[in-house]
Length: 362
Image (cartoon, rainbow, N blue to C red; front, side, top):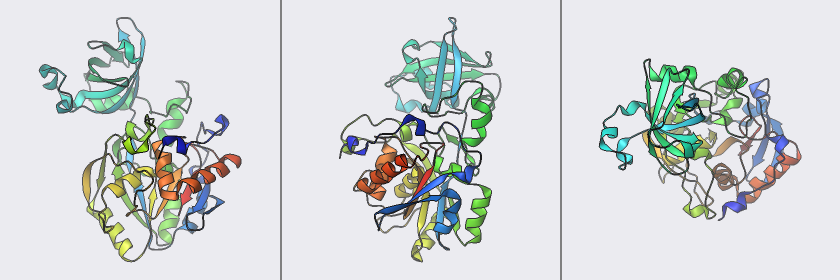
């Protein structure tokens, strides 16, 4: 199947630029796969859609301020880095041996802009010189290996001088980004630091909604998948069979696995909150449908034809055309039904993407 089969037209004004005043005020399109139909609803009505004994699975990853804006030395040219992942020297044999011996906790693979001006040896300063970096290696697609240096605790300083790594379709001036987005581009249950993008379906949850779900007898299970660049990187091939999502770290503990497996034994549904949760669960499930407690990296790429063994329903936001996320939704709901539901959402003026509305596919 081709990525062009997952395209649609979206008016630019439907791309949500700011979150709603209330997290749970989003609209929700309920898509019923068995009936091949949909209906308009609201996220605040989610508890009414879930039965007692069902399990909602959330991704408790926490976004860290992975975007840095600094200046090249000595010219002062503006540089922007997006921290993608900590560097493991064994993966890049072309880097010289003395580089491998350095403190790897401060070596990162980053996405750089403008990459063409960041040659090996370039030095960059951030936060009035409190944080410094040197380019050690150059890779494809604008990626660079950099080593950071500072006199303070690196992670604490990053929290201070870094910025929330918003997707490029959310436009911000430097002044208004930190105040609004530091809190709203984060789920209320975010715990485990490590993501460079939020699991956006979870942004709608409030304590009231969670309490109402639990009062109805719905169980809650937590997994972790640290959302990385691979989740939202463009699909650069036409043939989906040769596309692969870059590896992302995940963990499912024994408590979550037991809750999911016990519910399945009783014939209850597993509702994944977000595509990242789907990928974590489907990476850890066996042929019999049992989810194993596990941790590691997953590069699972879900395309039409994938047999879903762990997930019975999915709450997700609306995704970009030709994206791996829309392909996953098409694999779960069926391509034709998914695109027809998207066409309805466009016509009905739903809000799209990270700060937008959501859909429940059951």
